[in-house]
Image 1: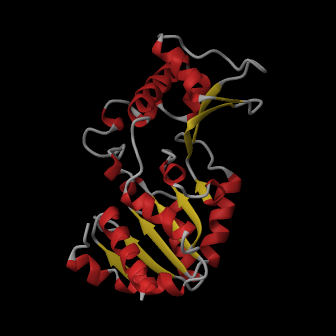
Image 2: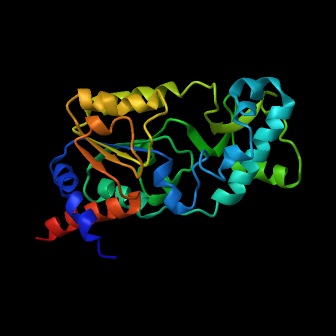
Length: 264
């Protein structure tokens, strides 16, 4: 699909910075996955219109059997829907930038859908700040369960039991409200941000902290800051380039320009 002329014009600085980059970092949010059919949880018709976020806190998961049942209902619905979802052009473009052009040092994501890995990004380079929905772990001993095993129980209206290894509570391997971000992922994300020479945010409002501080760290470290988002963000005034197009069009246009330059 040929790139739109207006997008082709506006992405030229990004394509040039990517060509020259030695340490590019990408930071993604819900907006990169909406084009795959995954709705933003906060958008109209999203998950939080049907499930009360206040009942989905980590503390209530630990203390309330009612909240745990609601949590498993939510994940049953998500697994049922999201297992059919495929990566889109933006995910594929990032995987190509990493594999073919060796341009991406890390993909930091707020998403839990695993679509970056499914598109071909190296799992070792994908830092999931909010965990991954395709895993279930014991909160006490850390034993991991295939999500399909728990999904099968939920299909039969069976509430998942305690951990078979230690009897502790099992939970989807995602970060709930009130639960600390994974220390390893956040520390690696901060280090990559400080060291980046180009830092590209895609599909994130940059309003959820502490993740939203990462572009600031990159900017303080001297990186070019690029924001790709349909709506304004609090950091637009700090950015070197703001692109108001969807993720698929933008990243496809950047990739096409890089491919043209390589072919010359």
